[in-house]
Figure: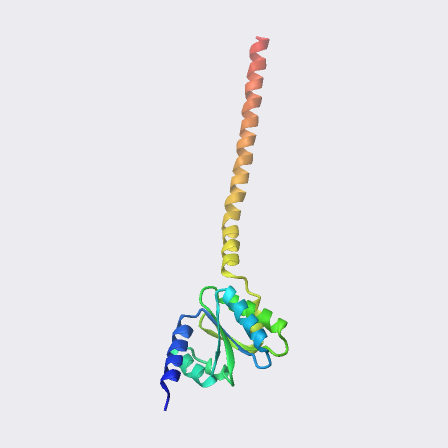
Length: 178
């Protein structure tokens, strides 16, 4: 029979999982208490939640949040990085932490905008550019043809001004001779 505390924890996790743009699961066993504090600080500075959860409660919460296939990734106590805005941030930071705390901190997989990511694919998702980078690239791609058109039109206007100036000089020379 579930206790009140466990029921409340499942409800909290379900709410967080449902709102999350990304989740990254990691095995943290072997990290010292100081390393866990550092880890949590790194995630909170980036606007992410980092929670240590019981696998059974997390499985129930994932199922209630409607995330299919995530339950298989939970085994033993697990740390979950939860990102709400930019899904790539949680993956990038988790990959950085994996490198910093290796071999004690290993990534197990996660969820990227509703798609379950297996352990082998986490590094691939960590290399994706962030949303602001993608917006900047898109803006540059969209402005590039307009910039090229403006340069071409400016050159044609400059050429027209040169031709008109030459015509003016020729007419001025013709009036002086007459």
